[in-house]
Length: 276
Image (cartoon, rainbow, N blue to C red; front, side):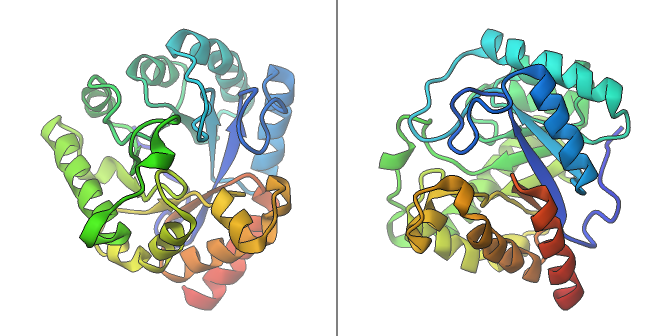
């Protein structure tokens, strides 16, 4: 059974980030112990998160991949605990490895959020087809160690290049049996994109929206916001994140992925009142 937030597509949903890693870019090590992660999940749900996105493998630039065994060791205790304590919560798992996705779905996850768009593990798309779950298909290039060197989008420009890449990834997914109604597109802010390319993508969101597949955008605390604001501290980028979220709401993005759920829920509610 597919689980979607109330009002899906009619308002801007909020996905709360829960990093279970020691090395994520803005909150690494804060929630890598189960009791702290569970308390954080409960706070985000109380603050209005529509979906919680649990990640046990950092995908920041330069991160070292830990493999499925370590990823599952970090993920499953927290996932089981949150599912027991919050049976109605919609839980997403951020992974590009099919064994992790399979174990997460078995443990009660509702969505899979794949930063590789199905490219890193050939078993992922058949698994998603069989599960029938919502699937966030994100644009990226390379991996954590190589993405910063893969920002040349040629004469197409970043908006059209991302659009075409997401279309190709969608065709691969459909060929594996995934249904279009399972899919959510993420343009992959910060993944193989410069500051100017991230800004161009945000201006070009209507081009992606018009494909008819719901959009999820994850701007929270990212480097390009720090570059624009000249703010090196990731946690001090809330207001820059809020400005991006307002832009997303104004063009009909279905969901934003953020760390600061409470303040951003206020932003989305006000932005929706203005533009929806």
